[in-house]
Image (cartoon, rainbow, N blue to C red; front, side):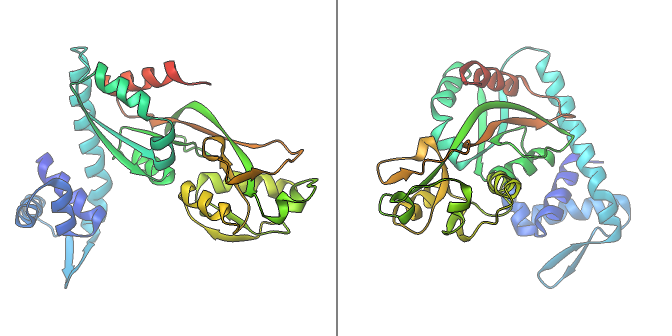
Length: 291
């Protein structure tokens, strides 16, 4: 069974599109269609139903998909394992990382890594922590550097690199900045601006308030912390932000309650053989971090 045909099949299945799969694989759409046709001919069954512009897996395609992923993963792991025997740090390293970490934590470390290992082809996907997490879980990324999941999947191996302290902040002219605050209950009388409900950070915040028996009044949500900082700075509500984002436009709300700390770190799949390039990056991160 040809791995190129399987790769095309998995891409079309995951993207539900021949054209998007062609872009992802850097092929023409006819070339992708040809690979799918070859695979269907070899297996003697149809793998996709094509109705108008919609593409959907047939029952045979649904049965093949998890097996195709495993086969491709085994091939990838085998190539990586054999490549590691030489001891060289080279080849492609797929890394997914959050926007915040890529802006405020990674630049100096990535510079050192690139200078030390120039033969590594670093492919970085700047995305949300939750999507990066899923990319590692599905085998699309070898490593991810993200906000850690509150309840990690058993197949995920994680290493905490930083403890990101979140501070309660408001605009300097917000009512909360002008009064004595005694506890979390005082915050619930005002609207909050927080990351989306599905984010790991939001889950940590909601857990803290839930433990205190309190409900949050969330005015709006966005997954971009820099946008939250801007909205807070012009008085739209209070929020929790990392210390690295707090500037003169914000006032920290003095609370007796301990600040929320979110762990940031590196994850990889337990069943994936790490390349020498990945091991070298993990080592570099651990040497430079503060946990």
